Image (cartoon, rainbow, N blue to C red):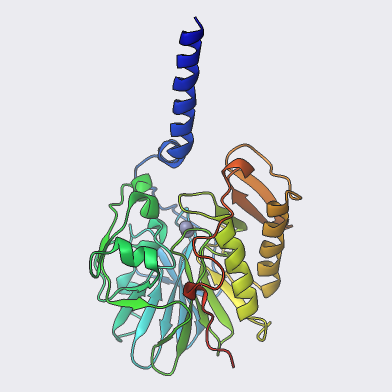
Length: 334
Ligand SMILES: [Zn+2]
Ligand SMILES: [Zn+2]
């Protein structure tokens, strides 16, 4: 009898361990249909936005002569993708889910050679189809994953199965070192490695414009998330501190994330919100902040934002790369 109980206990313990280990493989299919999510017919109006094309799926917002937000207000994700134009080339930072093709929108705004760079590899940012040139952050674990310049995204990185989108296999045209400058011709962008939401998340800092494009590191959706595969709260805290340090001498910097709410708000957060995220992470780490819910859990950041994470026993506070590692290089200080 004891032996049977012992065997049963072991079986249950193994099943629980496998369940925890494979939790994302179990939860993501349960939370999604595995079919493309149709665009809603009507969406909130985006102020000063110009609907594009017959179906008006995309809405173009001109931030300045050389900076455009290409919004997808009819998508569940309320994406904002950014087109940054220099004298020699243009850079598209994020491309949405890709059920609708963003390239004609880009081509209506510039004829320059185009580089695509994803803020991270989640399928709601990578778009679909081919790109002229792809730029990827040059960090050791991605170099290890790539075979030469061929980078095949894993399920954990992409998660496109949620909407029947195949994970892309990219040919990387440009590996960009964290802290280095991408020069578009008369326009410089500092690439910051800002993991936490995923371990491949990056932000682009246009110091001249005091504007940082932050992907899902901080968005205008009211939700900051770090519970999907390869999310890491230690990374997130490191990134928040890095971004605060980097912008210390430019406190007017605005943060333009990759998602918005469903009210047509254009992402444009003040630095104080990044501070609130950092302070919340400190309070989660110390145990002072109390989680709400079961899985994932919510923590209040401020009156307009929540932080969504895994429950404390699953939280990872050990950064992917320790402080001082070269991936944490800041942009040139002046
Ligand atoms: Zn994401
Ligand atoms: Zn996203």
